[in-house]
Image 1 (cartoon, one colour):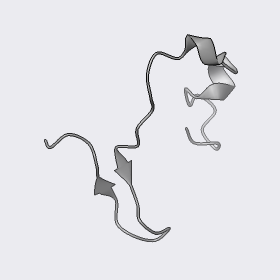
Image 2 (tube, helix red, strand yellow; image 1 turned 120 degrees about the vertical axis):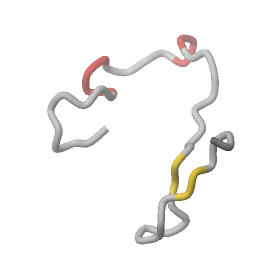
Image 3 (cartoon, one colour; image 1 turned 135 degrees about the horizontal axis):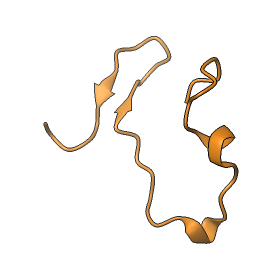
Length: 46
């Protein structure tokens, strides 16, 4: 989902979705606590 990459498969590719088409909840798995902080894995333990 990089705006500078034309073939990124995000909403620009498939367009908006109706809320009724969603099957689950999106959960961030790799995040930062601050903008310049390190990436922290928050998913299931590897």
